[in-house]
Length: 89
Image (cartoon, rainbow, N blue to C red; front, side, top):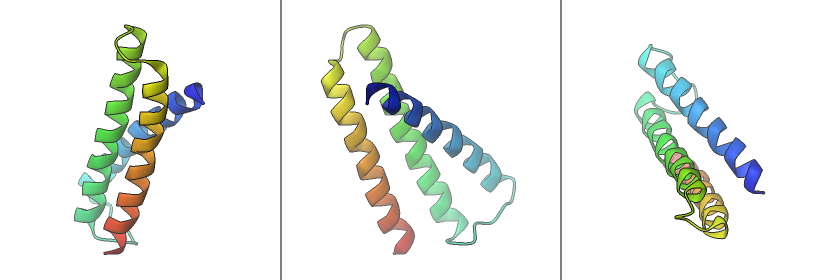
């Protein structure tokens, strides 16, 4: 699960950056407004950055592996729930 968290957090980060660039380049989302999508992408960058910083702290032995594993997946779960609520309101 630890390895999957690292791969998934890199995907989150990469897709959020690409999504922000696309929105700023003028692409319009079909599901919601551009402002909501931009906010969600910014939140996604924040969550994935926190997890990736956690991996650096874990490597420097300043953050326990279990804390990173459970905290990282919890952050992703919160991102998904908050994102769905935000897009549907």
